[in-house]
Length: 332
Image (tube, rainbow, N blue to C red; front, side, top):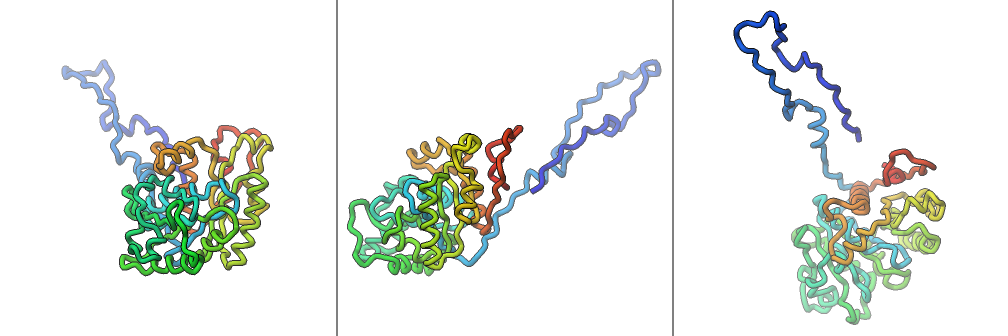
């Protein structure tokens, strides 16, 4: 992307059509003062067009795209990533269905502020107590974003529920009368047990969320192997809770080190931000904050790359960066 270049100051002679009259040759008429120059909106046509530059990302791949967001390790930010990327995709104009696959410890409805509107779940759909469209919770802020929970807290899941049942659910979302969504985001539970196998069964691409610590990276490396064994080859990595001060002090692995260890294309880097905790407690997604926080902007950029199936590049931090912001290691 190009940046607008400031225009040089116009010469005074080009601003006025009349010439200056020396004082000794003034006539009896009074010389009126020249009004100050005020440029119109079209005075800087190049800058004006650049500021209006905007486009919708081009959706790549066949729709609906079924993306599972996983990590292996708990507490690295899978649910936060699902909520913020899902709302960002809806903000970009794409239809999104987010499925909370954490049966016993669901939290996606809390992060979205929709916990009081979940009346039916997939359990009621499988039992024939309600229709699928009744179990879908539509966000009032974005009508193209819907939430679907597998079960209610403290409720028993049917014994037959597994990868085949979730696959049937995804197929039912694709075959809706109003058309299938552009994205189906599956919030995967922690661990690599039956819940993990169920969540990744219908997916054709994955977003692996990790933090720059050795325990998270070990679990992430194990999950990569399981995803590839299940036939999921399109795997991108999201590095969460990165801190530049610790990276520069060599107390935390850099994003480049993480990428070299896991060998995955990088979808985004989320900085450590206290606004994440505030937005979680309020049930208000971070990307909706005004003004936007650094972490919110990073989630929006990651959603853009997800749409176009793009990735970002990492660069090494300088020892003493001069007048460079936090995004100096984000790449492009």
